[in-house]
Amino acid sequence: MSPLEIPSADDPRAALATVVALRRLADQLERAATQAALAQGWTWSQVAAALGVSKQAAHKRLAPHVTSTGA
Amino acid sequence: MVGTLTDARTIRALLEGAERESAAMGEPEPGAEHVLISAALLPDGTAARALASLGLDADALRAAVQGVHSDALGGISVTVPVTPRTRGVMRSQDSVRELLRATARERSAHASKRFVSAHVLLGVTELEGGTALLALERLDVTPARLRAAAESALPVT
Image (cartoon, rainbow over all chains, first blue to last red; front, side, top):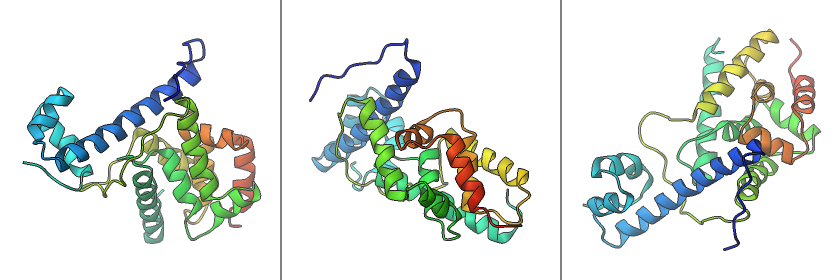
């Protein structure tokens, strides 16, 4: 993985574009990792704990985006 | 913006297409950039014609959108499985609502009898920022160039 250079706040357009891209990346990784976790037998409680959110919040946010649903 | 049943169908096709585009990119909700790509694929062909006059098509727009994010991250990316369609009410980002409002204003300003995909391109030129504009900039398309191309492609009323 190449080192990431964060644009400085002096270039707000680039910095904010990076924020958008990072959020998008984080969302994609969250869904991919949740999908993999459930496939490996993790429960929603365990996924939620790893994300630092409640089970309800994790399920509401992620359940529509995974093809397998855990316990 | 919804003046007739045909308009409602066109808008629905526009938004469903945007959902497909965002899902294909592994994103849960469409943004204005996905609505832009969807407009390029609508069957009335006015947006497609306008974009073709600029040497662009849906594929070029898709690549540019991915490029905007990739550039911002210095090349980091993650491969994700294609997300299934979201259940329930169609959700979208604020940028989509903003684009639809701008598109409605443009349509009124041009006193068009029906809503066509080129109106979406005009709406995009009113956006103040975001991924759609960055993608077009990446393709050397300024809002002024896009406006001129879209207005040329509008049906004669």
